[in-house]
Length: 152
Image 1 (cartoon, rainbow, N blue to C red):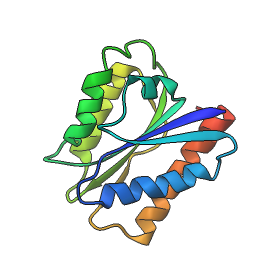
Image 2 (image 1 turned 180 degrees about the horizontal axis):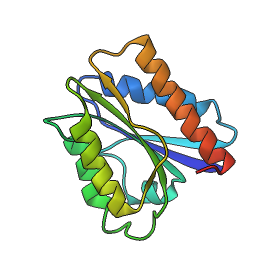
Image 3 (image 1 turned 30 degrees about the vertical axis):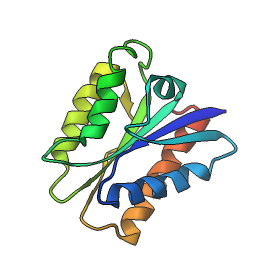
Image 4 (image 1 turned 180 degrees about the vertical axis):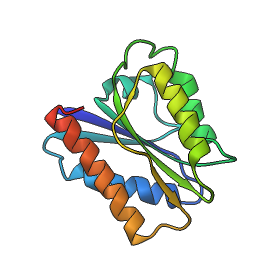
């Protein structure tokens, strides 16, 4: 059984809705991929080391990732050094602007971890729509399928 870690943070509820939709997609492969869905403040090194794949969902705050997601990275970066090389990951960004600041900040840190981006970041602007939720569900299912099949 493969393991997929979904770490999320949300204050308005939009990012949480997108993360929950992605989790639905991941659960479509429940027989092959075990999901661990945690708030960023609750996730730690053991969770990261458990994972065969990672999905990060965050709002863009002031052109950056959420403070809670940054805190997760601060707590795990050095202890995980060299232990998560090649870990496939994907991003969900909820924003009111263009989301590029959050994407860039996460990508820079992911390079340091040695993670591998396996999908284009899903950037959703404004209120959650059925289309946005469907895209998040599809991203979750695609990531889970890639991990289950050993594609990533």
